[in-house]
Image 1 (spheres, helix red, strand yellow):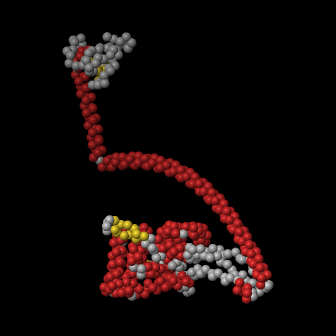
Image 2 (tube, helix red, strand yellow):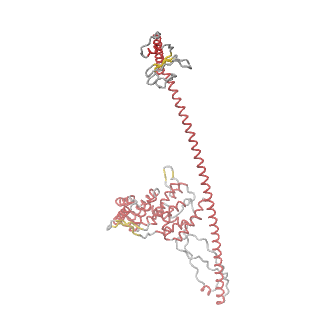
Image 3 (tube, rainbow, N blue to C red):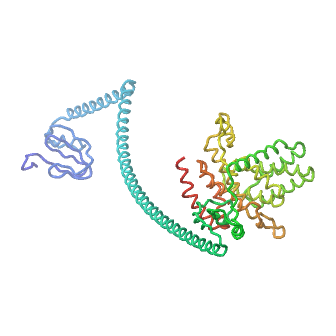
Length: 531
């Protein structure tokens, strides 16, 4: 039938039938074709351009017996289909041949690879550019955050500094007020003493009939200096100086002036004490025993080197050292015992230089070992102090002055610098080594107990022991150092000494230690900044 609008001929058949439209032949499957000739199927087998004019030709394509209404031949259509098929196969073969030729051509393959590499490089550069941009953005954000944190920290530091300045000003004002009050009290006391002296002089004059002038007012005392012992010194008083010689009766009535306190240790005395310790050590080093006694001394040093941070090991090594020293004394007398004590002290100093500098906690087991041995061998104390002072002049304490005309190398050698392949050790290493010596010495002074192994209970216990040096020696060292001018190494020495011994001094001398530490932290150490 014909469509009324387009005047096209339409024939609708069932599945696997042929739909013939004007100028086209379509073979469809499964579903019929609609009236307008548009198929809803997704699988279209083939569309051939042809000018079909009879239904018999279309029916012949699907194997249906053609009706005898038309007599159009079929051969031209078959030839056209075969020609089209040959053209398609020829085009596919030519495409495959060209592709094979392109694949076989090295130049073409190289160009294709270069194009692929260039494309990959371009993609990588783009990705890297994106990553750089992202990283730059992140760095900018981090920079802004750090700047903000820096501003906040500076603001907090400025606020803290302002608070500290205000506190310092308040403290200075309070100190000035207290000083003024103390001066007023001293002036009032001096005035009272003067009046009392005048009244006493007037009474003596009335009783004795002599005419003498009243004594002058008592001057204010000098600034307080840390004493060599923490015990309070008697107040210094100046005897009255009369304007004219007193009579014999007045000389009998006047009391004798109080004895002045012993002067502080001078720099010359400290230098002499240090040189004496160095000579003592040199004498024993030169007279080292040989043979069996020398082997016994080396065995004592070996026991010192085997000490560890275990109380049982410390007790065990102390017992072995005491046994070795007793054997030396029985074999060679006091000289052999002194040689053994010298070997013990030298090895203890070597351990302090090598181990305590890197592990300060090792100072306590070594000090416990020395205290345990010294409790049963009193001769060891003298050798320990001499070796400490000879190895570290700051144990005295003594700042070695540069002799007139001495070279830098001679001065460094006198101060205790160790020689190296290319001169002397650096200053930082020298400071650390001296701090190790002082840490070990302070740990030795604060030791107040020794380890004892109880065989009955098979447990360790700490037994109190009266240290022959102890807190008095530690206080003497601090007083001697405070009475000398501070040097650049002084803060290092104070820190190394006070870490092990401050708790002992605070427990034994609480008030004096607080005053001394306040003096060291304010007036004394501030002078180091000007060096």
